[in-house]
Structure formats: structure tokens, C-alpha cells
Image (tube, rainbow, N blue to C red; front, side, top):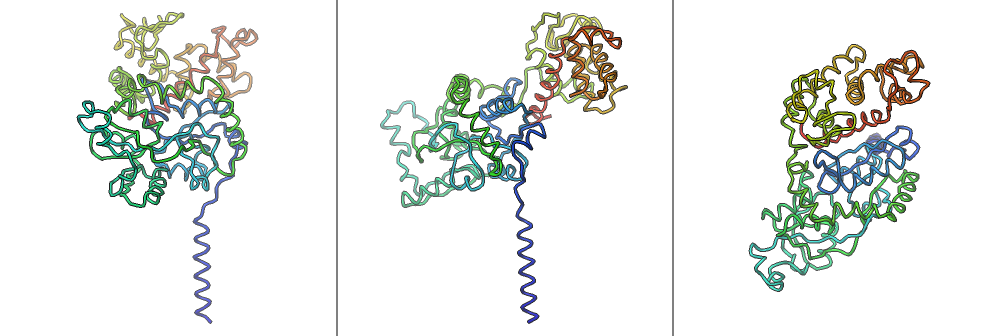
Length: 469
């Protein structure tokens, strides 16, 4: 009897432990997302979903999810996930609100998440390398040198991305053709795009990709063949948690509306169909997944950022915001060069040629450092202070002093930028406030600066995710 009780107790402990290990999906829907003020999107890092090109965050998924976040009136936070299985885990753990990625809809995945209306349909195709002399071969000769019938895959080896829908399809294909082949699941850090490149350079014989992705890379790797289909058309869609019905409903409504707009087709064409622009990006050293450079002035920016102990990627974001890295840029207000130096700054730092990249970055970083030292007497929190520095760089520190004075007078926190001092900078465009006794520097059209600060910081956040420090 005692033995039976002991066994029963052990079974209960095992049962309780197994239940405790099974994590519940957090109850997060549109209301909770609105409360936190931001939409967290999980996506991949590649040449079509999300990347940096010439200093600007880009990507098919990025552009669309940014528009959806704007539609909701929410800030967008991008989280890069390199493992597809991990995406589903993070979504259901509440670490993201939506998977904005090129996901194939499968029955297995539908048990884990709810898929939104599909963006498009695509087939899975075999990606294989053409023979070295393929350009000299006739169509018939080329066809004879390639796998054109899936039955010929028997006993072959196919490398695929771990966690991808290709594995399920290949397993089904073996049943259909009555034969087996070896499926190698590569580690998560090796993407489908990496595998396509490995096929092109001869490291592996073949892989599998969605046709829209394969077409994109065929424009860059001309020696790959993608003609052999291994699946029927499949839906490509984004996903949300199963307990987020309101988010799903709003997402579906937005997708249906977006798909009717010409803008939707334009975005798709830019990332998947325009071979010339795709090839230009793929060959550029300023594509983050290739060269990893933000601009041709990275070395200069790094050199001068180090002198003022700033993250060079933050300074690069300022330079992009000011001139998009065009050294000949000039504004209506008289600002000139890469860092749009105003005449007073040109004089202060003895700049002889504001269009010279070295002089511009040298003076611009020195001025940022001066502003940082000035505000350090008032704003002790370093992260908060940087917002005041950026705002001052854009519209002059005198206007920011006025905005702080107004904030203090009218009960806002003069040491906090967002929803506090920025509000009073906007109010400086109204006569009631720019004529206030605490204001010394008069009228200011504050909207540009109010947009400037988050634009620089958001771009910096993108740089931190994708560009090495």
C-alpha cells in the first residue's frame, strides 16, 4: 500500500511539473497593445524583409508593417529573429505582437498561430546550379543537365533552412514519389538566402525556396535554376496569437484595403520584381547584409564620434537626417554640408569649407559635444539628455530653453522631452506662448524638431540592430 502511495505521489509530482513547464499564452490583444503605445513586430533579416540600404531602413515587410503601425497610431518596434521556430515561440510568449515575415501557411503552423489574409501566392521551387558552360548550351541540353522531374531527387541531398515549411513539403514529396532523399536542416544562422548563395558558388548542390524569393536572387546569381516546382501554390501571410482576435480583425481589414491600392503593388515590385534595383542593392557595399557600411563617410564619422565618446551610429543617423549623406546639401535657412552647419557654427569652429566632409563632420560633432556638455548641467539622465541635444542641434538651444521654461511654468516636466518639453516647443508657434514673459527667443515652428528627434533615434535603433558598432 505504501508503495502504491509513493508511486501515486511521484506521478502527481511529474504531472504538476509538466503542467508548470507548459507556459500559458499571455492575454494580449489590440487594447493592451494600444495601452503600451507600440506594436512589436518579429521579422527576419535579409534582402527583402528588413535591411539597411544607404543609411535607410528598408524591406517589403518593414514598409508594410510600418504603414500598419501608422494606421494604428502606434510606434513600431522591430525585433529581428533568425530562427523561424523561435518566431512562433516569441510570439506566443508575448515577446512580439505580430510576425511580419514571408511565412508559408501550413496546417501545422495554423495550430500554433492565426494567419492573417494572405499577401500573395507562391510555389516552392528547387534551386540548383547550372553547369559552368550553361550559356553555350541549347535549351534541351541545359534541361538534360538539370533536375526537371522531382522523381530524380531520389537519393540526392537537399539543404534547407531549419524550421522552414520546406521540410514538411519535402517529407510529403518523398511519400508522393515513392522514394527518399536526404534532407539536411542547417543551423538557424544559415538562411535560405545563404543557401541560395552556397548553391551558386558550388558549396551545395541544391536547396528549396519560395519562388518569389528565388526570383529575387536569380537576378543576382545568374547561374541558378529555379524552374522545377515542388509544390502547388501556397499562401504567404503574417501571423498573430490565437488569442488576439481584435488585432487579427484590424490587420485583415487593413490588408484588404491596402491590397486595393496601387502603392501595394509598387512596394512588392520594388523588392521582388525590379531586377535592376535589386541587383544594384545586392552589389552595393552600403547594403547591410553585404558590405555592412552605412555610408562612404563611415570612417570619418567613427573617427570624430570617438573623440566625443558617442556611438558612431547615432552620429551617422544625425548625418542622414541632415543631408542623406550628400556633402553638397544646403537648406533654405543657410545650413550647408553633410551636417548642415549653420553660419554661427561655421564661424564658431573656424570652418573654411562647410561642404568638405572632414570639416563638416569635425565641426558637427564638436557642436554636438558642446550641446551635450551644456545640457548635462540640467538633464542628468544621459538617454534623456540626448533628446535635448538632438532638438537643440535641429532648431537651436535657445528655443529649447524657452520650451523648458514654458513646461515648468505650465506644470510639465522640463527635464523630459517626449509628451513634455516637445509639447511646449510646438506651442511656440502660437502667439500666446511665443509672447509669454518666460520666452526669450520668440516664434518657433516646432513640428520639424518634434519629428526630428524620434526620426534620428528610431533610425539609430535600426542601425544598432543591423550595423556593427
